[in-house]
Length: 268
Length: 365
Image 1 (tube, each protein chain N blue to C red):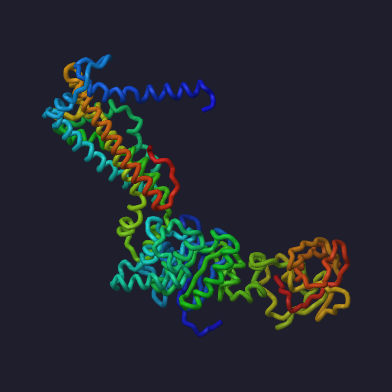
Image 2 (image 1 turned 90 degrees about the horizontal axis):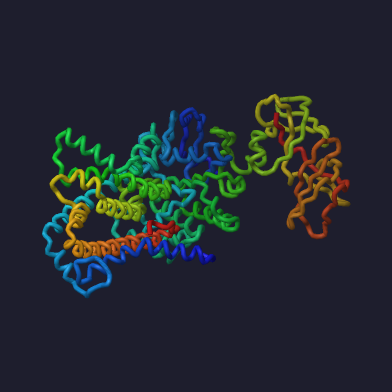
């Protein structure tokens, strides 16, 4: 970064990226219903208001169920797909992978609409269950991408060695493969969880009468009086995300140090 | 060489196809109990595939592989009395050295103390006493190799399979490990089957060697026979250096073949020196570089002698390689001479006498 122009660009870029997020806690603690400078005083009242919001907790509970189920399901499917594609060859493998990865680039709007049409036609009632269905669909490609690289870096002779030493294919998977791809599995769980928690369009289309967090927050912004409490919620979510990512990164680095592998960057 | 030992591994007309590719083309051979056996050949000759059919990692298309007299066709790899040292060592990176070595004992019913003792003994056997608690990934190449050996030997297999185990080591380390492997094999008395593309390694370590080309065994013999009496020009070329000169067969009796070759003149070879059936490519005589000797002033040949001109000199310190052209021949042949104190290294274009003996020649037809 020798040139002053590039330096200014980099700083400007980072401000654009993070300043809005830094504003969240600023206004969450500001003693005013109006989101504007100058600040009028310190309060923790918005957190108290948020805490006593039963609807919010209901939406949060729904979102947690959806995100956790989605991350576990998508990661499980990802493990199967990644294992199959890295170890075996079968007819139409390329095409199949392409179809699995397609939702990655398909507009979510289209996924949401087509799912809605099908679900209504079949007569499945809309609920958090249908949201999970949609989220698994869009999260699986991410899981496959992350896990494929984890499985690819696995030396095939490690499996053969375990097999040679008397283990069955199943115990080999449990004793050798699983521990070695664990960092990939954790990454996949976290990414899928985050994608699902954030997701708005499918959640909005397919949730029916159930409310999820993203849709709830969006709805609350129609009432200016509710905005500071939502900023308080946002502040907590930012803290939770940072903590989660730190933990994940810690485990990823420890895993690399433990197996003596080369640090290829991870997702942080 | 003991011929009384029972057969440990037997291949009966083993064929292996990968789709249209014929990887093993009718392998029939037996490996004796307690033998250090090598499968030697260039890459793609099927030697690793053959090794993997013993381990059970590779099925065979037809024929049979017998281990200690039992047909292995329905025995999976994890139930066979064989263990393998992999080319990449396949050390489990998330486990410690002792966890790696003791991995095969997991299904053993022995007590934890007995298992720990077995692990310690195995580590000591490979010269890694006291390394048990280390992380496996922090070891050097040579140490990993030893861990892989200890891990494979702890189950006391009937056969130890080694898939190019030394190819990742540097030259010094490789030579050291060769000697250690021989020592280890004598110590445990287990049948070792080694796959290698390094002819020197095979010659140094093996009781017997199977030289493989394109899915077939070209020759199976002990190292000395393989070196001195190769069955074909191809085997001779692959193992060490061999000079070839065109030859003419003058007469063939039951036990004696009369041959004439430029540079050597006329000489008689016995039947054991004549290899294979006629190939139609014309006959040639072959000889190793060390079987010819450059005669210095005053020296007398023990057998025959020819005149030659030095064309190239390569000095190696302990040895000097000369490319000399025997009078009456087209191409130079290589002679290797030990550099004895007081003996000069000849210059290019020097005329010299060369001593040779018909007994050291082989005839290819």
